[in-house]
Length: 275
Image 1: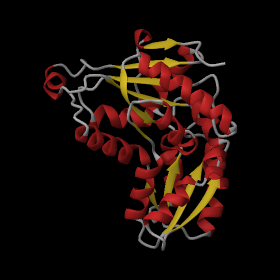
Image 2 (image 1 turned 135 degrees about the vertical axis):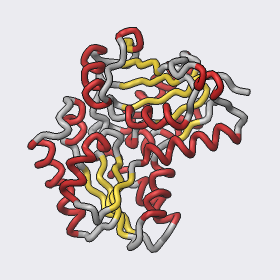
Image 3 (image 1 turned 30 degrees about the vertical axis):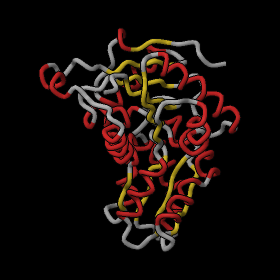
Image 4 (image 1 turned 180 degrees about the vertical axis):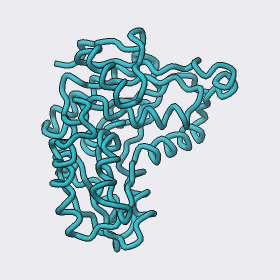
């Protein structure tokens, strides 16, 4: 049985939405998270830059004992996942396939909106996977470059956030979407604002839960195990260890506002990993 940690990474605090799901669905598994806060946002980065970041981060996560990697970033999932699978011997899973499958399953009319970073939209991965799953479904994509900086600064329920959400969602509403993929792990922190703008008629799909569920099934197939008995005896036995490429105190503060609890200073470390 594999006993290593699960490694997760994102450009910043957005991947904490995936960590939140992982702590629920993978009880007893040790989690190691890397937030590349020195380079956030990823949406305006080139493919070469994203590949370089992913390679360095995954190498670091493996050095910390990770033997399974969850890409907690849609942009990296769209751009880097395929090549990283060729470069590292550890199993990996990204957000695109599980998220697309969930959207296809939940869309009644087959009119699926996607709000995401510029790089994710440009990669076209969601549209390709949705089309492969169901040719009767259409994806309408909208880049939303201002949303990640808003979340990274903790502005998730402010007039500025609502203005930006309304601006980005209006073109998708005009396409009569019935389902919206939150195609960046930062965006679920804006869920309240998004629901106010869209109302109850549009189904929101957060790929995080579907991805961690798929990862759990994949790990079980591969013979990985979580020490659920230990988790029941001591819920704090498998803490999340956080590493960031930027300021650790700033990460802790924003994470605390977004999650309702601040990771202790002993659990967050700054790593000068990336050039």
